[in-house]
Image (cartoon, rainbow, N blue to C red; front, side, top):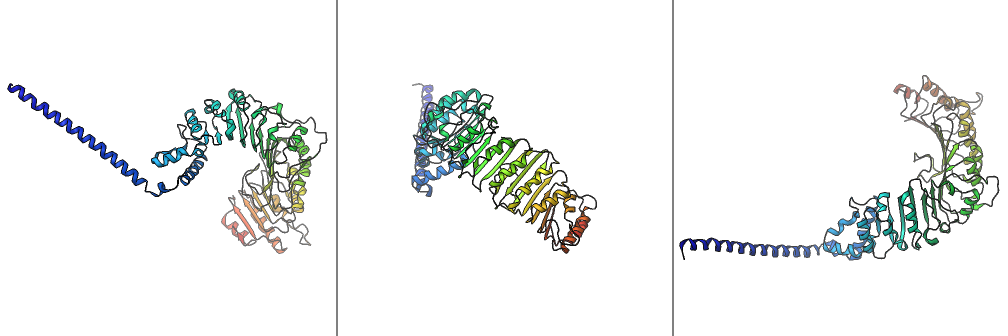
Length: 512
């Protein structure tokens, strides 16, 4: 062997030994990593969360899923927001994957995740929602193929897809369905007459927007809630059709209709319909004449919450007041009137105050009656007529907002119609007429306006020159006639400096 050959062997042998050593070290690292993983897994298995019984852990996961569901949207990729629990540890993932109930709330944001959710939910009843019409296009056939096991179905579709969706909805019964909401975006109003093959025995709530249907649908008979909006003109019912439908829905608890009924039968008489379980009734799009015809044929509970948004100008409202009078009980304690920007809003509440700013269909359960209509800003007759119509309610609080001053005569009429009034709250309203009405009517007696009034609240008021002195003089006069105020509240009032407020304190101790 030559010297050069012997020298060449040493480097190659050394390189082989080094590579072999690296491989041994890599194997040991892999073994150690695996050992650490096993040890960590055993350590995790000893934590309190992993010691929880699977059924308790599953209940926690379901709670997390329900809380995440309140946001109404999945993650960006369409995956459910609770998916993170499957990435914590093997035990959690196994429990989550074996809990079919965890995968039953399907949002149609991703066709891929719809497939996964349907598979993992097994045969458990489904809750299906679609908040975007575009997302529904990808998967509605796949989702609606599961119609027999869907208990909640909320769909929002393009009108171009509506007929195909209706074909799917009409292809199978829906024996578990309890809640159905269907909204269409576009000009086409799909018909839903053959929906669910007429078989949805557990259906209790229906919301329809821009649909066409027959009011004699059998699936409506067991409903507790019906919400119909912007339906096709061909589906607008006559009074007899609407009453007939309501007669077969005697278990109604909530009825919300936004439509203009066909008035061709207004002069006919029909048998009254009793809706003794009704709790909420919200009607929009009705004319005064439609509303009078409908309420004249309904027997309703006295504690019913009624909201009306009338479609036309408020002509004939006094006749409507007379019809509604029988639906307003003596538990009413306060009244609110707004007349500005061409809109009249009137509300009656069983509470002494109003916690909601909504003038129509407010969430406040104490507000029993809400009416909104077009009305000229100076048509005070309509606004104050309600004081006379509902004078039997013994209203104690009156809230008002007028863009113009009603004047002394209207406030004096209100005093006669609301003799039990203890509190007046005015906002954004000229106050000269009210201040003048506060004067003693007869200088020889104590016959003053609003004799029981003890609180006056003025908010966002522009005081004109000298009005504060006029108010001070009249409040002092009332105090001498045992009709003095206990409280005067001034909020965001203008042209009322500190010295003027001090002057008013001479007549009213509690000035806020």
